[in-house]
Image (tube, rainbow, N blue to C red):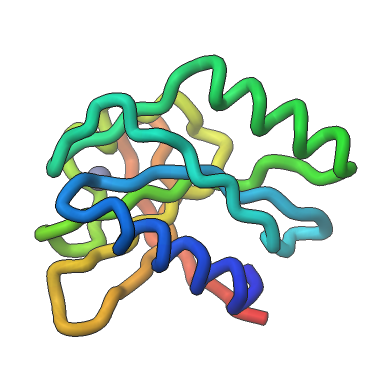
Length: 128
Ligand SMILES: [Zn+2]
């Protein structure tokens, strides 16, 4: 991911406080550089969900830019950057990377995960 994209994600997450923020990242050649903030229709401090319409829109727009959707991000306003039980149970996109931003500490932290059928694996987030 580009450092610029990382900053955009963190800004979005801070802007949505006290609620969880969510969105999608796209890019090409394994490098995510485009951030798509999406409305959290749950409007919750401990959960998020995105509408099918918003998700479809991002997939279409990414394709038009010859990019592919690479991951989903969301924030944890008061919890650590680890997937919650809900994040694991209601994950509809096992093929996408999951980025979690924690705003619970003095500085935001960002972690990358693969969540597939109840299994969680932390991956290294590379910044460019
Ligand atoms: Zn979560």
